Image 1 (cartoon, rainbow, N blue to C red):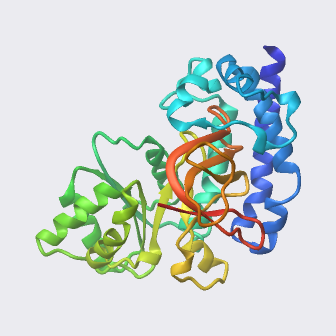
Image 2 (cartoon, one colour; image 1 turned 90 degrees about the vertical axis):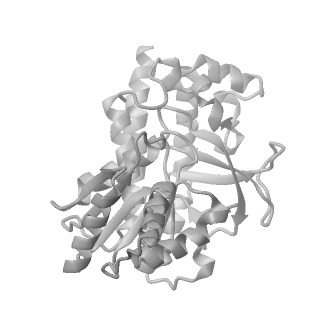
Length: 346
């Protein structure tokens, strides 16, 4: 057990160093090929697989039933994914009695989660802000809040970039309206955050009483959840009520508990000097995550235009499992010139 604990600390440190080294590629496409290529990712993935295999007897048995063990594989693609709905049975966190959500993490595990979270979030939501910039962050919250992953992200961005007038409003339409009215009156840039349903519910309330806002044109909106088929209607509602163009609306997608998030790319592409169009409506991950689409029958990676389940190999998902298959369907898209995988949810 002592050697496993020692490897846990070394591995977290090495993965953290990889994340910090490759994070600049999120906003510098000249670094993409180096960040997404080479063998460093695979070497770390194999080490993390061995650690998770040894730390969770249930996961080891799961892999053995599929004739997979650390000494017999050479590439992360050979690691069998576990369905996100079954992580509680197989993850090292569950094996050690920590649970998947809401429990304290060891210091180096928390460090790794935050190290992965912030550069990815900044690149996609706040690429135009410096370390010293602050803006008004208004969070539309629900009680109870079912999306704990989103709460962590919202809290992290608020702690880092919120000004003194920022606030979170739980089931409080009047409070949100007053905060937006104040920001509108002084031309303050706003970041509006919340679950899609909470934001849509507030926007529908505003529309029903004839209330709308024309926020600073550099205002933006971050949301989690929502149905893919309702997204266009929701964007139109947000633009009508808040005055925030859809290209400044950023969707957050979390395929696995405790892992990295995926975001809409329009703001990041603009910050990279790229033209943004309807073809830019896709999701892609950071350099410490690989994503592939598996067939609904559980097969291997699919060619373009086929649909299947989003499956991720995420180095930052240290306490749960690295290779996870979500319940979400997507179309794979051609990778970027630097090798970055892309996909569109269905």
